[in-house]
Length: 391
Image (tube, rainbow, N blue to C red; front, side):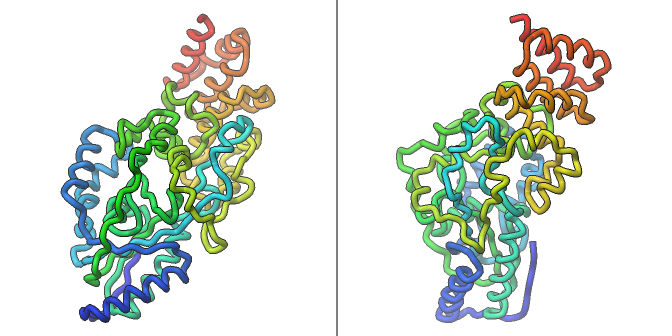
């Protein structure tokens, strides 16, 4: 969040119209692909749906969503003086369909948005540029947000012409498809809100059908506890067994529902000014990723959003991909990780190892390592491997 302020703001309709026209030009110059204007409040229907979602526990371990619910439900709670919200979209469209990387078992599949620098930094820098322009032109007070404050940006953006919330719960644009970031500028200017964008999903449910873990309980209803993006990024524990095989080689996030959206035919490839993927993150070899210690992990993902989950969770994810790869060349690294300092890593190393070798070899390692194991989750994996070897 950032704030700038001066005194006085234009109130005449003509002055406001000129300000909005200039705002759109400045946003384009800053690298944004679309601009929308929404009121600084959410509908009663949206609030009711959000409360029901939280009550059902669909937010999983993301406790901050419940703890900040009051502020999320009422944007002006963050800033009572706010009268309008300016929504800005920046495309990060990939140069090829990310689904093409899913069958590549020897590689990790990283969500498109995370294949370069942290988008929070990229978008916020440009948001601040637009916000400074708005302050200079109008004298209004402003605050900027990029996905870190308790703001329900997607429902707010859906109240503008920016797009509509698709059945996968993400925002969809008829001009940008499903591939774009959202930033918001709250302002004391009383700008005329856009008419909400018409929902154009129709009878299509390609995004729902594409989900590998059946995380959608219905159109517009996502159970985060089953979502690969939640499991690989937000979830800090041992990933439940039922999701491991469906995860495939997805080691950070999942783009399947986004990639399936037919509106992506209008998506724009990320510009030089926006977020272009690092070549070494498009299909990184699992053999390289499994070798990361903490220092190597931090160095490789310097400036990346992936760095925030830490080495242990990342290796946990990569081991699940390795277990699904059935690649014997990965065995030495998996075997080494059976004795890693992190129980998250050891547990998934057990799972990957037993999917790669014969029952006799699993038994040999289990008899060697299980007697000194102290973590209940890792012990459970060894016991599960015992029951599976008897089947």
